[in-house]
Image (cartoon, rainbow, N blue to C red; front, side, top):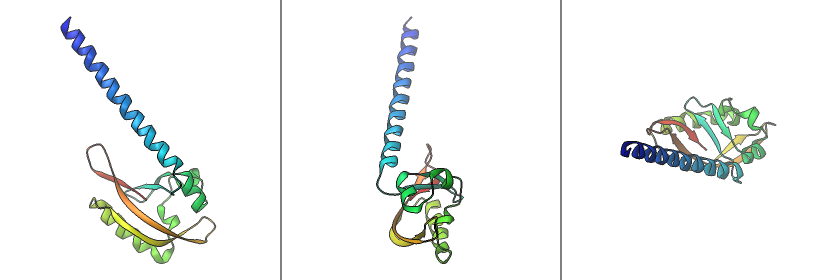
Length: 132
């Protein structure tokens, strides 16, 4: 019986840990969703994987329009070299210091933005994308 009790306790601890992890993820998702700052994430191929409401207001694309598209839809042609540099630094696991630049809205107008780019890591620490 002692083995069953220990097994049950381990199961309860595993479930509690999973619940705490889920709660933390939901809390972080709520912070991103309600942020007044545009927050966009992309994978290592430069494809947009998340898009918050502030990004929608700033750039004019809904999340449905933006997610799955290349982040280059936001970058003026004369600044595409910035993306190459960003991806290179992110692959190396570096944060990109804040910098001022221009980005494109859906309607084609330019908007001045301040960007900070940080790597997104998976559960084992591999860089799998970036958040801006």
